Length: 192
Ligand code: AP5
Image 1 (cartoon, rainbow, N blue to C red):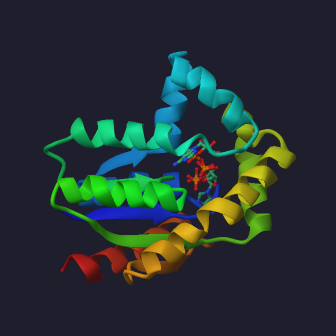
Image 2 (image 1 turned 180 degrees about the horizontal axis):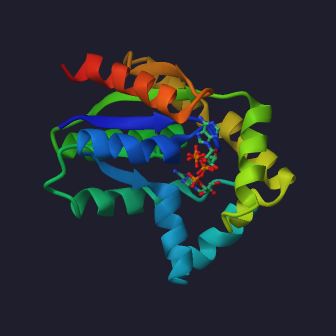
């Protein structure tokens, strides 16, 4: 089993590259953002609680997302590996993920960290907001709050995995195909 964390700030291309990577490597895609939006669409109590937090650009509580990931791991016992997108976002989430994977006798193989400048992130998300219907993309102040939340609480996740020598920085600007090729090259080095 080979497990990957695709890491980076909002708008860095995690979702875009995840779709291509799961097709290329047969991994199960686990995106906490997608799982939360599915709860919102179904108007579950969890979704109703999460929506107001997401609309402010803040992180939902660790125990909520760790619970969702734990259930998703249990629901996919046959997976050849997992691609985590948008998770973990705090050190507490990272530690919880390590414990959950340890119970399955597996671990994180590599953390691929997409590098994109803040102005490019804001531009991409404002552009997407024109058509995506995502309420957290329509307003520049919410987009900047998401980026600040990343800087304050999530960027340290890279430090956490660096102590185990698992982080590789990948340039996240350029064409989608160029970035995909760079990500594949890093994965292939570690899988072989
Ligand atoms: P989440 O859904 O994870 O959103 P995000 O991290 O803000 O990421 P995005 O989906 O906006 O960006 P992305 O990096 O996937 O980029 P994408 O490929 O879409 O989280 C949303 C919210 O849920 C959070 O704010 C939080 O409230 C909550 N949440 C989620 N997980 C959580 C957790 N673990 N803990 C606590 N709270 C959590 O690309 C963006 C745009 O750029 C697209 O339009 C795309 O077409 C374009 N694009 C992609 N690549 C390129 C390129 N190379 N060149 C030009 N444009 C490009």
